[in-house]
Image (tube, rainbow, N blue to C red):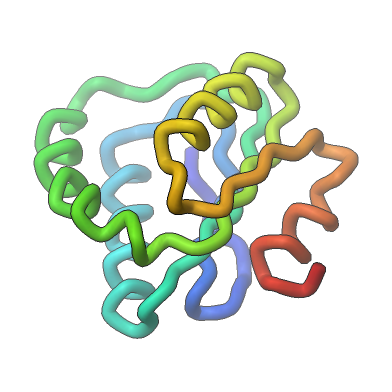
Length: 123
């Protein structure tokens, strides 16, 4: 499940938990595309708790939709991942290494407020 959190219009802020569905991914992409239409740079805050997996239904169509965004990686600014599971933090660090032009940080749940300040550019 992806829950959208209140944030500035240039920040995509989500809480991810349990199982992520194709509809969740589509909604997240809708939010991202809207933010990219409004702003030159978009920031991402993702808080992950007890992630069980991603439904494969609709995943192919979603991948086709997001592939063009790879050509716009220079429009991503600060990314903060807050995760309670070490494997998610590890995967996020690998992703960070693959996206050298994105300012990417990984946080533990107790550092959630610091992560939010980082993404919003407040510290």
